[in-house]
Image (cartoon, rainbow, N blue to C red; front, side, top):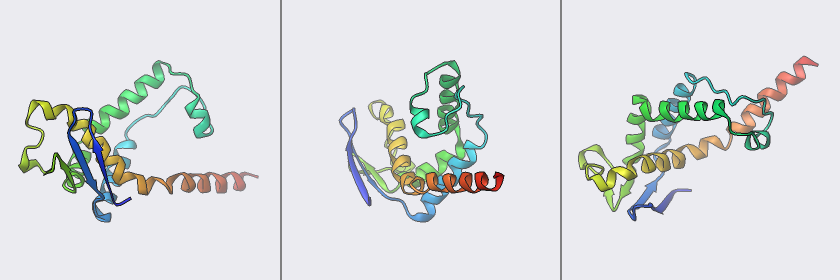
Amino acid sequence: MKNISKKLPSGAELYITMASFEVGHRLLKAVMKEAETININFGANAKSFKDFAELDVNDTTINTLKNIVARLISSDLIENVAWECMAYATYNKVKIVKENNVFDEPSARGDYLIVVKEVMIFNLLPFSQSLGSLFTDMLGSNTESLK
């Protein structure tokens, strides 16, 4: 997964190249730092991703999702590193850096959050593939010590 091309709902073309490990790792750390500040409560006791996917949506779930999205969008720390990652991408063949004013046009502003999301997911995905096993290993070792 070195790069990806996407046509956005507006019709604009987004081309993303993987940021360097250093920049991607800073993004991971920024997201994790912000995640520490959010009280994540879905109002249920899900023991697996399957359980989580089958949860009923309730006010607690909606409030938690709102808090997560609001924190990600409002974080200066994440925004700064996201811009570093976006420097590895183009929007309608224009490099995405602040100096290029890519999102100054009102028609492009609607794509801003979509672009940030796509760039962040693309750069975080390689890290996240090992997170599940990391937590499983940690929980497994904790469970074993309780026996």
